[in-house]
Length: 107
Image 1 (tube, rainbow, N blue to C red):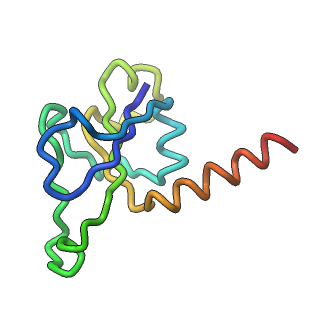
Image 2: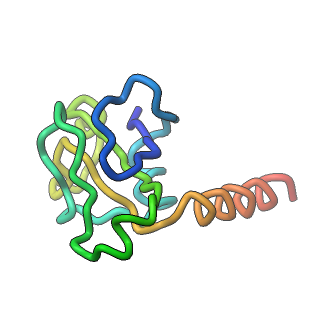
């Protein structure tokens, strides 16, 4: 399973952060991840600064997915690598997508 983390700028430890787990390809579809956006150091928390001070001081929470090689072994597309992937979807956007998916499943 891939790990979905909600990370604020400047997060230094993962100890008290929110995490979910889902199959990696589900994360790709849900969070619109791209294979070229990998941050390969699995042990380091990604630097999420944008370079725009107005965005960076706003305290935005980013959705990041950490995936290990074991999860990728069943993925046919070899462009995906182990590491961190940052989604452009917001936490609210993800909640809306999950709500829509839930409605479709209950029909």
